[in-house]
Image (cartoon, rainbow, N blue to C red; front, side):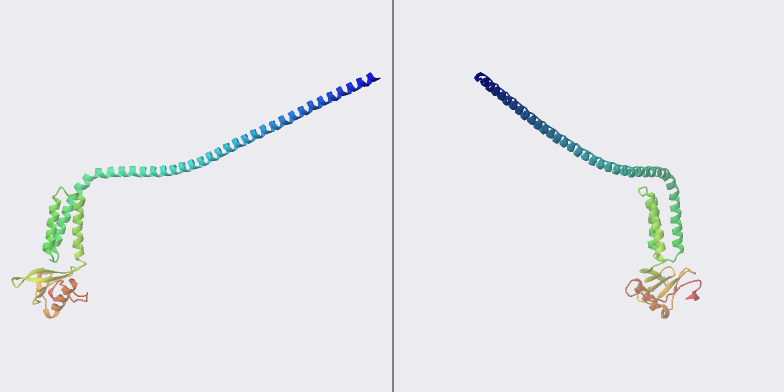
Length: 265
């Protein structure tokens, strides 16, 4: 009986020891499994974070590429517009070059035609001056002499010659719209006397001797100077001379207009 009890106790102790060993082993296995799962989870979390970071980097790169694309697109659009404008300018310049080449081809022909024309214009202007009312004749004839001398100069371009001829015509044209007083001389009674001339456009040319003893006017019919009645025109001509010289304010003037006959005075 004692032996059986002893055997039972040993068996029970052995069983308890075995159970404890098994429990410890199970506990150790469970702890190992939890650690592995935890580590695996941490690895997956780290991997997910790394993947998320990579995705964010790719997204940032994509946004940057899109921004760069939009910027480049705007630059390209601007260059297209600019190139289009330059092309139109080049086309216009090409047309201008063609026109200029054509004009240069015609320069010699134009110059050959315009020189004789200007010569005829000067001849006509000279004829007009000689037939016109004889005011400032020295000045006007000197202008013609200078024009003829200029036409013979090779260092003056045809364009400058034409400009000077037109300028002379313009000066003559302006005489018809202006009033002027100037000093000169007239043959009075066979003697040259110093007088003040009064020109009102081309409708009247009168004179008055210094001191006012003689007052006269140009008769376009007879092409001579005629004496004017001093009681009628002396003061008017004197006043007109002062007006022309801007010594007095403009005023109404009674002036002689010599027409067809002397009776029109």
